[in-house]
Length: 245
Image (cartoon, rainbow, N blue to C red; front, top):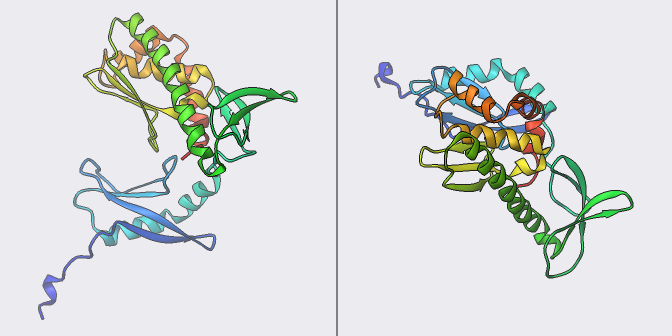
């Protein structure tokens, strides 16, 4: 047997680490654009270990071990997933609403006030309640984002072709040169000025398809107070991503 030609360890799709006595699955990815090993904790979906194209699994494991304490601390601070179940609380345009199942088989979700508290009345069987509420929130998000996107497009002299709602795990929006904009529907949960900032940001990409100084000047031209929404999203975005499925 020739010991000089051992097969290098295969890079797995995932690995498991123990944090505070619990097994935590870490997704392993090889990124063609990565220049070094990277460990991240996206808004949802669990931790991710990224390797560069020519990365070695033995080096990746050592990197993960060195950053074990960092990962443990980040997981402790990560918000818990918030489900859309009866009695739960969900923000809508920045205002907390309690979820109340009506038990009715038909009808749409409705906003109401109950003893001084805003509520969302959700029809249907309890097993389908989360889906119904999510679908309704997506419709609300589409309406809000369509209106704000059209407003910013008119100010910047561009045209938005299509607006779609997505459930990205780590992105709030994306824009193609063809005029299609994808938004994360969870933006409707945030205060309106946050949604407005993301709309301005994505529409500005129809002028500048980059993040250059010219791009940020374009965002500020249509939304002078852009830093307000940008700062809020940076501070509270992870919590916002924890809502819904």
